[in-house]
Length: 64
Image (cartoon, rainbow, N blue to C red; front, side):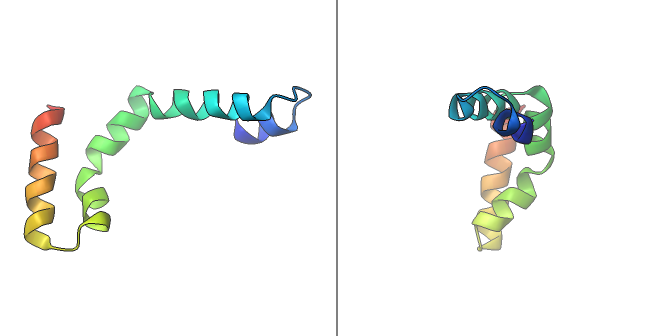
């Protein structure tokens, strides 16, 4: 979709791209992906194993 927005005849590429990515990030599929991979995501951002587990558990409790 990103390439189509840039390659089409509509010159408002920025607005198109913003709408495409906003819809993607707000989609149920994206949210499901984030939820199913929350431990991996936190692990990439937090290098302390205990903090990682603590943050992951807190995030999971808010998501349910």
